[in-house]
Image (tube, rainbow, N blue to C red; front, side):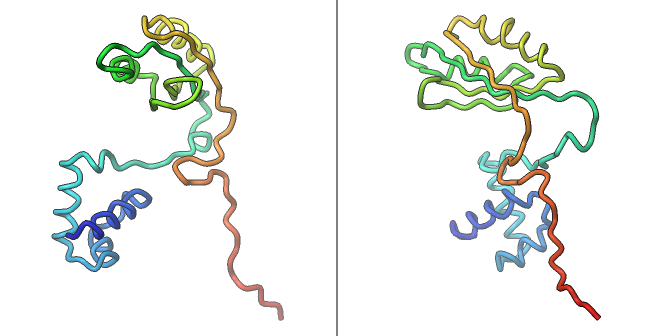
Length: 165
C-alpha cells in the first residue's frame, strides 16, 4: 500500500471506524488483504490507537454527567520538561484527555465525573496537591455542540423533493 493510500485509509477510518474492510478496499481501489495488512501495520505502529464511537450521553442516561476543562500552570521539571507531571496527571481515572498548551496555562486537562462536587474534589484533593502544580482554573462544560467534527443535536433535513398534486 502506498503512503498516499495509507493516508487515505487513515482519513476514512478516522470518521468511519466501523467500516467493513471489503468496502474500504473498494473505496481505496485496493484488495481486501492489502487493506487488512495496512490496518494491522498502522495498529502495530500505534498510528491507529483505538476505534471508538462518539456518544451523546444525554440521550442515553438520566444520570448526572459532568465534564470540565481545567487549565493548569505547572513548573516544568529539569530535563523532562512537562512530560513527568503530564504522565502523573494522565494516570488519574477522572482524566479523559490531557494536552500541553501554549499561552497562559501549560496543560489543559479534561475531566469527567458524576457531580460538580466530585470534579471539585478531584481538583482540590488530587490535582492541585501535586508539587509541580502552581495553579488551576476550572471550566465546567455546559453543553456539547460539536466533538471531533461531529455536530450534536443536528436535525436531519428532509431532502426529498416536495411533490404536490
